[in-house]
Length: 175
Image (spheres, rainbow, N blue to C red):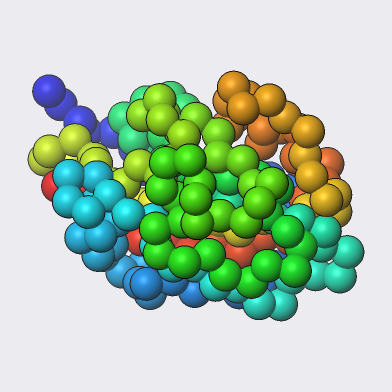
């Protein structure tokens, strides 16, 4: 299989500009993801903490997206909605099935693996390093009313008018 293709643009650079704030993780921006975040290894979501969200933040969405997947639509690895506006961290493993480590009321949408949890890095063998973009998105509503079956693409569209800030950290991984 030939995986030679152009490098896609940063998907967040194509959205309306909003305030930025800071997010940190178990890895530094642009560094290799630890084995814990690899699907075939520990398949565990990283600890993420953030600060400096803009005034008016009432809730957060948390996502992990791979724009380098060899598909026209990238690959959603994780999508969480309705995190409380006063939250500043999720622990490692918060993306476990059923969201047992997430705050009450948070909802995990189905990722592109077809499960409602964090699905770790798994680029095709021999492909270049992929970008795994973890975004914390500040919203001006307490909750986004979506059904559990809502796709990440549709949820992204529905929350677009409510985004007041965004923080992104990117980990890299090649098989």
